[in-house]
Image: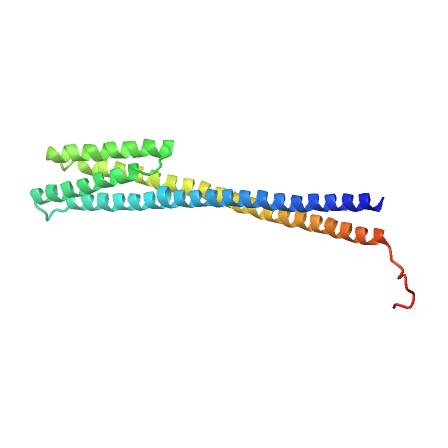
Length: 209
């Protein structure tokens, strides 16, 4: 019944080889998903956090410029209005750009308050009331500070997510190596077992060496 034993070994070996192929396919599929997750995380960090932070810096710079302008004793009133109006126009453009990024619930609340303040600045500017702009600017800068802190918190969350993805990928790769080594050893054991089961054949012609 050696032929049944041989067939059994061949079926077992084929099953193990199929297992190798299956493990490799599963690991590769998971790795592709991890790559997509990492790509999405990095895009979010760039688009919704780094770019948003650059807008916050622009907001802050323009508000400081506006504060300096309206408090400059050497500038005529009309000139102050002209510069302040231009700055508020630039801030309004930034508002639309910032709003296009993905906002968290807390971020949307602070940003909504900030845009309300910039709208109030514009109303007072059109009314010729530059004297009351300073406290509104200070309040708007506080909102920007809160928004900047949110960027750091959200970026840190995204970093933790990418760390988990890298860690899981490393674990899966190690698992793949262990599984492949074990299957390889089993195939090798079956190969030698098959060779041993055949025994040593004695030549029919003893003169042949």
